[in-house]
Image (tube, rainbow, N blue to C red; front, side):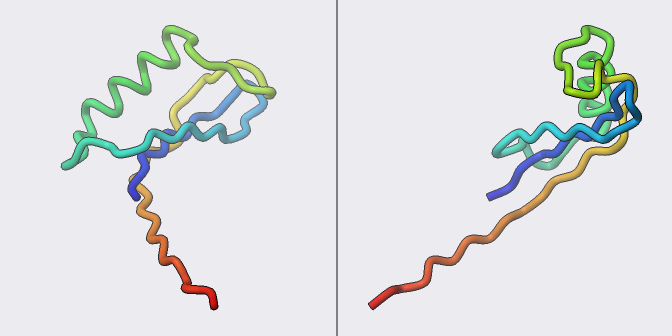
Length: 71
């Protein structure tokens, strides 16, 4: 499963991560930057360390899960 992780800095200069399942691929960096700017501008989310104040990074994370057969 793939996730898009959006990482922001909050008022305490700590990283806050929001994850979105099943991102549209290929990922559009310009659209992600624009969306992150809008999240900060609209003050959509907050954290225990205060409001989000800056973008830190964004990345796509892929997780592979393999079930193990149990007897």
